[in-house]
Image (cartoon, rainbow over all chains, first blue to last red; front, side):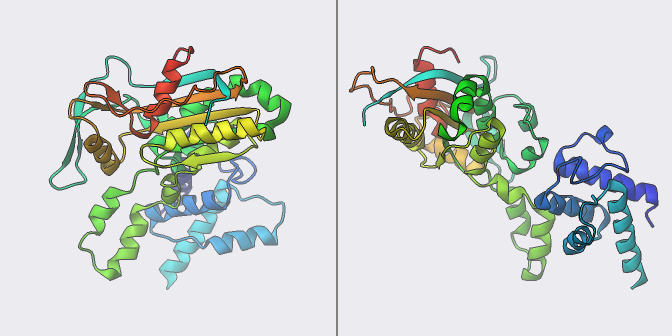
Length: 94
Length: 257
């Protein structure tokens, strides 16, 4: 089972790979849309890298529904790690 | 058609003089494909140029990054034209499509239909396809430079650079644009493309990576018989595929490369 720290590191690694961001620019509070300028294709790319690292497929539609439900609220690196954790736990429970 | 334009600025990116001539081995083939007598720019793709948006590297082939490297150098020369009217500055590119994913093709060979989708997805990130599009480097270049005028891309294997120059001339002559940035690039990234250029050249010709950019503006004083250069690969000379006519043109104008 991956620890919270592992998951956060995987999210950071995926962002660095997919977006070319410098690792030291990323904190748990970094906002994907506002701070990193992520668009939908970038988010698809980040989720692709996450799936390669963890074997867990993120539902992009779920991420976008989440954004639609909370307009103006950005998605942070930590929140992405939390969503990933929830998906992994759900997969283990099945 | 006759030329109406004059080169105001040009830039070539070519391998340094000490870059060795060597046979390039593409080991995605079994047995490996060898393209004889090549000369590459000795820098990793991401080190060719610092792009304004680092996300763009993921969706650009080496050829695309080379094209951006040549074109971005025109930023200062383009400045006055962009300031006057950025909708009347155009980009005209001659470039081959980005490299195919030959590693993926090798992995997929002999796989079952059931495995195909999973293996394909595993070996192709979502932006991989974008790197194979010929028009994307020009679009990136336009975004980076702030150009809002026409963006044209030509892919003909031998005449694309001339097509780009001629369309730039047409748009300058017709007043569609007041400045035209003409760019071209060629890299050795794609083995089949390198092989195609190799087989189209005399054996002694060195196949060379390269890129060029030329900024054209209207000059009505040019002689009417002044046409674009068009040359075949010469034995013993170096040849940069689709980009060679523009490199020739850039080197013939009075601006140092």
